[in-house]
Length: 223
Length: 217
Image 1: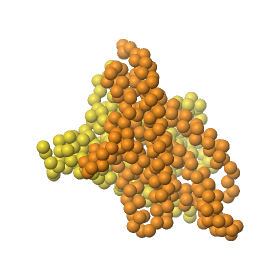
Image 2: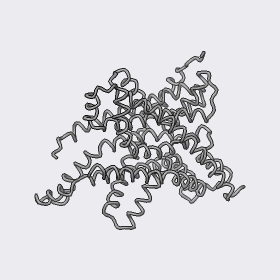
Image 3: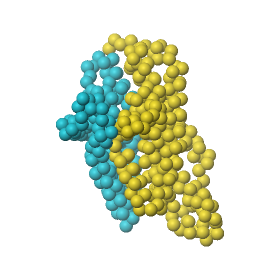
Image 4: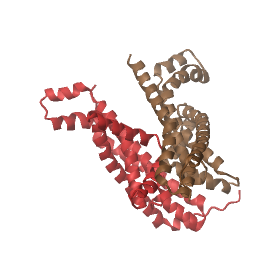
């Protein structure tokens, strides 16, 4: 092996890499926030909505969970403009990520709500708590604690799978890498550095989520 | 310009066999390596635990697409001649090994502690303890999540399209470039994945419920 590693060209492009990293973070965070709103609505619809709504939500979840994210992205970016819905790569990427996360998070949230024992809600009523108090203290808080690990690892999975949006040139970190690659031809070095950035992001987010858990949700359970 | 007709449909459908073949490689290779990883993660040697933890962190902490690129662009650097088949195969095997290894670690640890202790008390060696006591029980626990993970592997093979491997997604892109009918083309592509993955998801869900019932009893 007489390959000379040359990282200079990669490190020289650090402002671009930084910008790409920032866009990846922004995309993931905004997709998660909007996706969670979608998921909370769907979880409500699935547990207590009318029959037809349950059917629609179930179909949405099953279709999204059983098809690749790449195909969903192609569908939103190439297929929908053909029927008149035009949008930029960024918007298409965000929509695909929201729709994808929404389906996974719905199942997670539903499982959390179902993990609350009926007796706990009845106990809340017996204590004469108002409905919103029951929702806030008896349902949401313990449910959030139960699903917190699943929800945060879903966020990290989404951030990593967002690398795929580079195929429609959505300016994210992997798109930056692809552009640098075609300018400098140092593909291997570039992808090593970019993979390391993703790894650092994943580890940093997972450490941050653990810290938040310790500070806010780490109260003892009574069973 | 061509329109989307039966031959185009057949072209995409036929590519499904490459999706399935790639999934099979990723699963079999990933299962063998994943079992080793899971055993290393649960072993008593600090060295083995360290190596396997690092392996899992790297492959679960970076995007599958980047892993694919690194194998594809990295192999020529090491002086290896590589085609999309090998690159996709290697990257998917390593990735599935990390995820299966972590899933199976959980299953091995879910075998009640008393079973380990009983095997130790019977002075069984490590290999016998694992082979005859722990793994058979872990296997039962692992069945449902493993079938569930199979769906992730099948969906993951779609990324091989980006390095030019002709499977269902790439076939869809090719047909789309010839017909400019993305709505029908990508609907067909999605439908094929759905037809493969949904039965597996249902099966995994049913196995999960059966186990939960068996445990509740």
